[in-house]
Image (tube, rainbow, N blue to C red; front, side, top):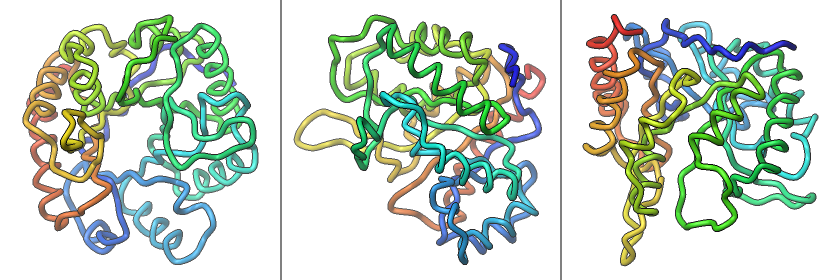
Length: 283
């Protein structure tokens, strides 16, 4: 498949929410304009009640599939059986967006229950680009790749992260999922400038934005990308500044733990939607 380097934004999508089973009924009955939902496809690949529920929601709201298992930064290509299952789910629910992480969770046949970092080396760039191209060719569509959160310094890095991401998109035609909470957490943990990172980020490749909460790993000063709390004021500020600069872009409120009532998530979603609406003309 030929994937052009220019990535148009899906401006038909507004602000969305992570979808968890606790909120299936609320999601199905919501009539909010522009609302969409994102799920981890791994939870819906094998059929059953939850798969049937997702298919019902897909008939009413746009969906995004946000994968956690392709292990794009691993030492081997993505698992073909997994790709077949993902493609089957895609063909059924017809997602508006598909994304994965710039991370690895399988290495030399061993599997790990986490999204693990990789050094931004030239060899890693080549390997990851090959894995992205294989994935896109197999699925027949572009994917967006998410910037990671960082908790420690790695001396093996050869490329600045925005440069690494820009070269990755140039080589593969993939898009980017910009997680602003990851930017904030990483900047705090590694003492970097979050505003400068966003200024250097290849914004023309952004297909989706994530907003999420984080937590403090006491007694240390480490911030954890925990997705268990509301979006923080500093993350909102970074997001507002970015949207003013680049215009409207599909934005997700990501919540994976300590789930509040659906109405509380919708209130956060409304805040993101209002920021998008103010900047609609720049899209």
